[in-house]
Image (cartoon, rainbow, N blue to C red; front, side, top):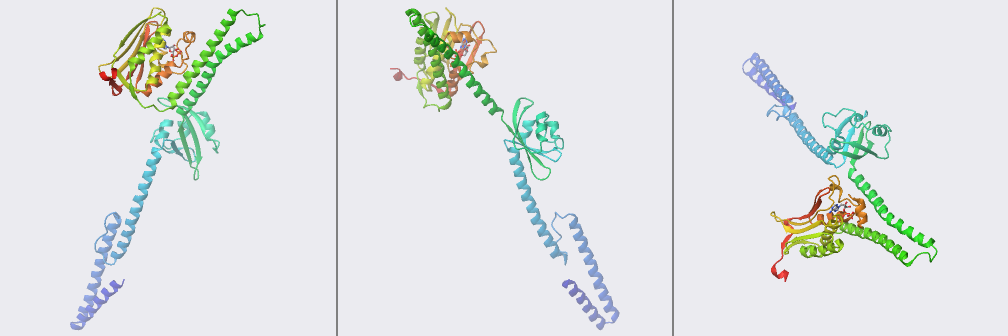
Length: 436
Ligand code: ADP
């Protein structure tokens, strides 16, 4: 404003000076010219400012007279706002990325329970499509009637356990609705399929253990009651001995189950002991001796052992796996069958322990379940031969603890081959001095 007044005054002064020097018309003409020039300059500046205002993201025009100060103030404010927006956008983006990466599912819903946003886990849990499902009712996507009942309660103190069928698997979800803001809902989903499965396995296991122990216990109790109820001299010495032997058999069965359970629990809970070179052929020889005793010369044994082939591992654990497979071969192979035990290195450097029998074999549908605790393909034979149903579960655990694989090949009626395949990284060759 001051600048403008000074410029008008200067033009008036120039007009006055020229008017006094020449004549008054020249003076007025100079003043009029000056004012016109000022109007034109000002018009040009306004048009530069207007053009900038249309594209406010660009730098403001360099020299626009009285507008310079205003524009620099506006421009500074604009730049500060732009930086704030960029920072907020960055924060928002990071928050969205964090929400997207949450292991739990998160879904936001509007007042009518229409989907407004969902993260990756929620899309996976509920089979949502990120773009096409936005704006649609959650009840079209989660169709379980119990969910509709839960969602319509309006107050959600407890989560809902929901079973949903995904494209490739069945899931159990824990769903919790929360209201936030006005007419806004947050739905949190947690996949508890694994936890539920473990819980079922635990319950089954407890039921199985109780059942397994109850059978011999009932038999034992029956004998004791019979003995108690009988007049003292009504049993001959022979009969008494037979009863005692039968009771011992039941007690031994319970002892075997408890001992196998303890072995399993130790294998599951303890860290692997320090690995040391294990002379597997010595373990195989020992297990074969026990196998021959168990067989009572009713089977033919064939043995192929690479004597100097050793592996890094835990001897006691490997001994139980080695003998388990031989014992099973004896128990599930009828008289005169052949049992072939091999310990060798294959062309890929892996060490293989295999027990092949010509026994009763296993039906294809039973093979994948054999390593489950208490799973028996041939229940009668297992019981009759003192099986606990835990041997292969123990063997599989020992294998896993040695990075080995338990392979089972079998044909129902014509025999089986059980192999433990140890990785080449665990293989050692005994030097002659070790053998001495
Ligand atoms: P069990 O004490 O009952 O033998 P295991 O865990 O050792 O328990 O074996 C599980 C089941 O696998 C057995 O009940 C049996 O039906 C089957 N099985 C194991 N080894 C053999 C084999 N060599 N031949 C046929 N069936 C076998």
